[in-house]
Image (cartoon, rainbow, N blue to C red):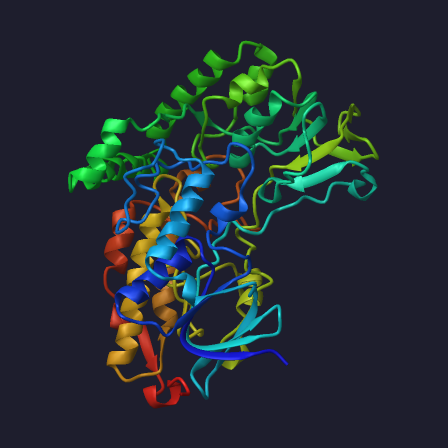
Length: 498
């Protein structure tokens, strides 16, 4: 029999979302919360992704908490170890470690309408019971590994970029990389110089812009550290520069075509071989898939030991991959740069709400639907951070997370002020939000750009992206609209047992 823990708020995950929520609660003087973390340290995706070249593609002065700015980023776009270190320092500063239960992976949760409590189950058999459940699990943590025909026969090493095998020495090896997304664009240049041969299997080429990265000069770091307001001003300039990109993504494809010309020029300048250039030039409008940034990806593909394969994988043999054109490529290792489960990330999550409704099953059949990307009707006191339709293609998701954690704290305060036990979004408010957001997405580049992407679910509906400006989301979540919710039960029936 596992251990039972009772608390006020159960938070799941210790990435930017979970840590941000915990810090918000601490700032409000609350200590009645626990954070469940499946791993042995905080950090989420920035703990897990340790592949060579891993870095953020949003400037770090923007991709960080507004309330905990770091004057000492070494580069404009910081590498993974620095971001992970930042998150650990923040957790330490706000005494969050004492609230984290490591090695506790949530397997499911059920709402008890009699108690007005969430009962959260973990893999180890323990149970955590809380009035509020905040899921900060994110979408980029379940590696997507394709079922390659014959992979069970492969005698070499294979791993996903998010589960990098640092014990395996790639030097002198024949390597196949499957996929050309954001991770591959970062690690391919790092390994290309060491491997004997690299066969890069590309289904669809990405649009890649030059990366405006640079070391942060010492004078700027000193200025940010010693002169109040200077880093905030720099961050603000970055925010509005990034925010302007939303115009092109949302119903103004002409602007994306201007960016596309710059990206095309980047290909023409970097790749001299016309055959390779043709392989690397996308046939869809830029922005339809995630726009990537890199200065060393195209040069890496020019190397004599690198081969871009645009035919699919027909079969994996013991020491080789046969492509659909019948060409056999001898390989010692296969690295999957195939991204993550996003629109289906919650299918297996066993969340049971009012009247036995199972959220994973509902979302698998009907598509992910929420109110503001945070609440779900029929699942009282459940809050998602960076939930459906709050991802971004143009700015920092940390801005969205901060909007959401303030909103969740506001919702909890509303419940407590009202002497209620729970808050549940009205079905009509949720429906209005989804109709409105899908209407906007229909005009956007993700729908109109002529491609398939991980932004879309199995039915071709965009359940991932927030369409438009992030300041509009901030306005929408600045304070809770009481009319959109119904208050449930009495506070007396939701007290923590002493």
